[in-house]
Image (cartoon, rainbow, N blue to C red):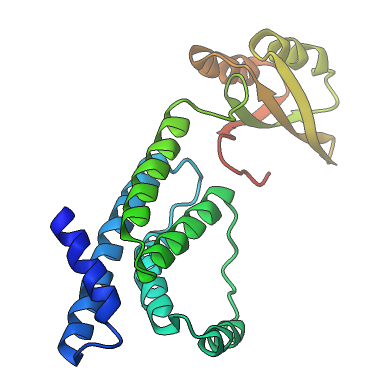
Length: 233
């Protein structure tokens, strides 16, 4: 590892002033190191992803970002004119992909930062930052840091409004859920479609909640969706 770092440091000093062969070897080495660190980031992303939408193309872009940024930073070097030129060129690109998960945005910034570290010749900082930050993300993910107490669910069902079944299904909700919040209600043809956010449900109580709601007279189409990620109801 130390031999590789010394080679890369010598290459960063001679990439612009050395021979074309040295420039090619250094550029290839920079891309290789960036790709290796990017693989670590992609592996951590796959293991810690908890959203509802997983995109393989996003993982591929995450792998390419450090490589592209390292080459871009090598090309810029210490030239202010090149830096402004790169910013102007990037401003012409219109990114239409909507990033719904804030953790995806954090991974993008991590990939860009690692690429800048490698492209600027700070290899030790890039390797250390990748190892430490990926470790922090993994530990926080495994400990469910930031998650509310108890799992949350989106409960959707249809109830007939003519048979007065509200007291019965309300009792079922109070029995299984520690917190119940009405999200939406749609009335049509003597029936109401209700959507609730229910929390603090035991893992063993999910089936009981659905079965008892289905047993209430006038209640139909009971559905329970996990709201661990972002859910549109």
